Image: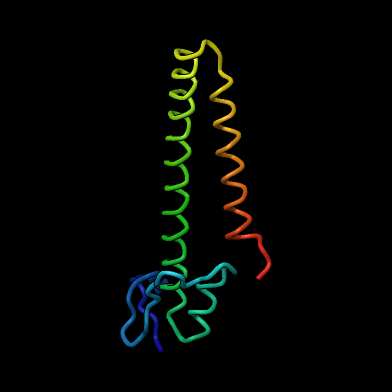
Length: 116
């Protein structure tokens, strides 16, 4: 199969090539092993398309994680302010943070680290 090239003869990365299948990410495709693009290429899907889709998905995940982290900073400030206004100290906020971190740790273990 011939690749489409620009005027200088450089292959056009991520461009649709006639007759090639492109990687269409589905929910769950890629699994937890991080080899979704490799498996798609092994199944006969366009390598550049599979890699481009994997990069888009990873960039979206990084952006989402950054947004959640920024919102978490706002919530910490609000929690401390409410706790200090209500009781004069930050003990309740610290206990709330500890409970949230424990919940996140258990959830992470259950989804990603538990042996199947």
